[in-house]
Amino acid sequence: MATRSTIMDSNSFRAEHAKGLDQETRKLTQRREELLGGSYRLFYRKPVHLVRGEGQYLWDAAGKKYLDMYNNVASIGHAHPAVVAAVLEQMQALNTHTRYLHERILDYTDAFGTTLPGYLDPGDYKAMYMCTGSEANDLALRIAKTSSGGTGLIATTEAYHGNSELSSSVSPALGSGQPIGENVWLLPAPDSYRTGVADIGPWFAQQLREAIADMESQGVKLAGFIADSIFSSDGVLPGSYLSEAVEVVHQAGGVFIADEVQPGFARTGENFWGFAAHGVAPDIITTGKPMGNGIPVSGLFARAEVLASFSDSIPYFNTFGGNPVSMAAAQAVLDVIRSEGLQEHARTVGAKTLEAFRQVGANHESVGDVRGAGLFIGFELVKDRATREPHRELALEMLEELRGRGVLTSVAGPHGNVLKLRPPLPFSEQDIPWAADALDDSLSALE
Ligand code: PMP
Image (cartoon, rainbow, N blue to C red; front, side, top):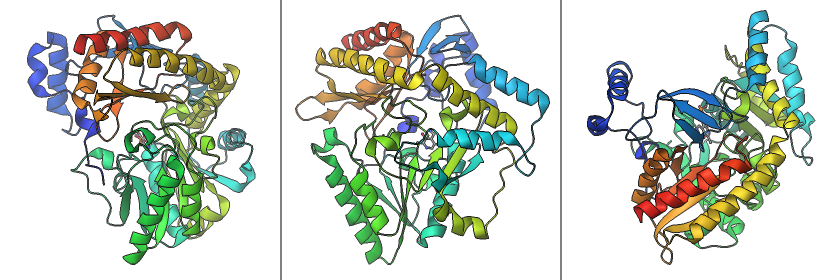
């Protein structure tokens, strides 16, 4: 089992850096420390104070422009006018909850059905709405337990699925201070580069078989396997390798939960949903972040028969979930992805970006691997290309160097050595040189 690391803390501001800050930044960081709970973390030694965003760009209080290479919430672009208009219009008319009739939630669910891959029948799924990815996964895990009659859960060793009691219990990315659930089994991620296994599908399916056998030997029945199909927190692992693993889960009577909070909504280019790259049929799909482009809205789409045992016995009400304003924002996001051709854009621009980043990697010994799908790229840093020893310190220094060059991003992976490059989808071909040169120059400055 891999060492539990603390990616979420790894590039955080620390009070000892406060000395080097300008007066304004120091004032804000001090006010935060006085007013906010200590669990909050800031990015960067010199925190960034953002005041405006548009498309793939951000501006700080001093007017400096940044290229956002990290935000998949503002997925169709910061401050997208279509979302602003939809929210404003609905807010001016009505905002209530799901105990009254309203068309928006139904129209959105119909539209959602059209995003599923052709091999799935939207009629097989039923929708529920909430406000965050954590709530969606929390409910998905509860449903998995009810429908399977089991309690055992499987996740990967650097997964992140949320901040509730249950979803954090399958989120080892929170670090060693976060207790992992009693009936949770953690598996190493299907990482071809780190394991050196080319055909990672059967390898990963075997990990699942062994975990399920171990579970059963301890008298625990499988409830489900939850995975982000591009394994974002585990280091960004694109590919098509999960089908055998999902079969193993089903054979053991478990539920497969596809956490689409990161790969969903057209980001991976070839597919609208991350799980579709694997050709698998999730029992439950959970969504969040990009769904409302910044308006808090998330969803859960479950096979009707999986949902039934839960729905029959337990009511669900989420005060803000599925309200007309959230649904208006979510509808605008789907409409814009279509009208602006953002899935195809992610595919073509993503391929060119990957190629450009690979060229940068070819010139620097400390770049071990560059991989991606659409506009979701992992840039892995190593001490030695032959041994593939992870270079976490370099990755953390890279974040600071990139920030200096106006490029904002962060790290992922169990060793914190993978730069996670995941810009808003309007990221264009014209932005590639800015990002690629920043990577190139930052590496040159640090090597
Ligand atoms: N699942 C994944 C894969 C995520 O990346 C996140 C957020 N980082 C969540 C779930 C939780 O979403 P939220 O912060 O909206 O609760």
